Image (tube, rainbow, N blue to C red; front, side, top):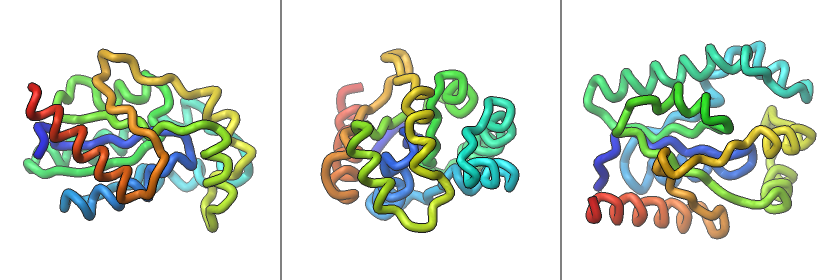
Length: 173
C-alpha cells in the first residue's frame, strides 16, 4: 500500500489521534501505538494537574517513542504512532532521517477540538491546556511531506482518506 513503514499521526490534544490511529490500524492491519503510553508517570501527573509540559519533560518521552519506531523498523514491521509532535524539533526526533516515516497532521479548528475534548471521558489532558496546545503547534513545512487531513467526518471516513492519500502518493512517486 505504502512505501511508509511508520505513519505518525500528529495534532493537538483532542484532534482524534487515538481514535483515528485505532481506525487506521483496523483498516490497514498495522499495529497502533499511542504516544500517551510512553509518558513517564511524572508527565501524566503534571498534565492531570493542568500544567503544560516543558521541553525538558518531553525529551525522554520523545526518545522512547523514537526507540519504539526504530525497533519496529529494524524488524521490518509497520506501525501507526500517534503523538502530538507539535514542534518541528519534536518531529525531528521522531522522524529525522527516517524516510519511511510518513507524517499525517489531523487538522481542525479550536472550536471543533474543544467540542470533542468536552465530550471525552477519563482523559488526563484537561480542557484548560487546549490554548497552550494551539500556541505551541508549529504546522509542518512542505519539506516534512505532511498529509494534512481534516478531522471532519467519522473516524472511518478520516482513516479512509488517509489510506487513499497514502496510496495516491505511492502511485505518483
